[in-house]
Image 1 (tube, rainbow, N blue to C red):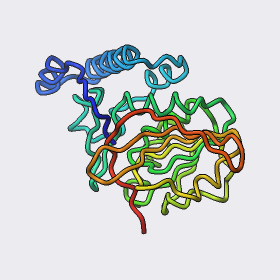
Image 2 (cartoon, helix red, strand yellow):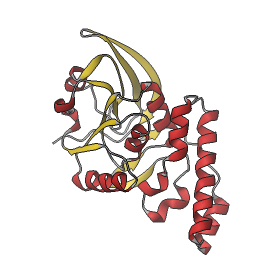
Image 3 (cartoon, helix red, strand yellow):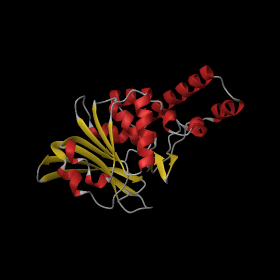
Amino acid sequence: MVFRYRVLIPVLILSFLFTLGLDSHEEEGYLKEAREKMVELIKTRGITDKRVLAAMLKVPRHLFVDRSQWQSAYDDRPLPIGFGQTISQPYIVALMTESLNINMGDRVLEVGTGSGYQCAILAELTDKVYSVEIIEELGRKASMVLKELGYKVRIKIGDGYNGWEEYAPFDAIIVTCAPDHIPTPLIQQLKVGGRMVIPVGPTGLYQTLWLITKEKEDKLVYKNLGDVLFVPLVRR
């Protein structure tokens, strides 16, 4: 889950202090400062939605990665979370979320729970978040972290290509892994007037991030949001 351009927040001092060892109060302070810098950076890159920015400022990204990576948790880049997967770059999380224009009460489907970080950002914007993860270990871990943070989301272990028909139709769908084509079930489960953001393209090469609006049952409008590089959508 990687954006084409990687801009890093300077963390040399933070890294040095983590190496020395901080008490919990100092650690919390530096992580808060790093998160604030992360949000300021994505603002300079064009993210303007105040609710999205507030969510990015509130959600503790470091809790969604291994503790050994906390000193890098607020860099504007993806980080590994195991099983060949990553936690997405903060700017891309913000861009995809802002593009969906989510309002409280909207029913949102996420394909690819991963670490659960994107799920938490969505849960700050609406109380109806549904997420599908094919890797059971990741899905269960994400569910535990989200629960500990107080987020009430529904997570299913399964093939995200097929969406989650039980809770369709959705006002918004966000896909955080790249298929080589747009899955028909996701289009079918998108409400008329709904939006879907999805990276599409070959594995290992740059893909296109599309914002798709379902204007009518038989009419889709596409907007190119740029080049991205995501992990592939895994099928069963």
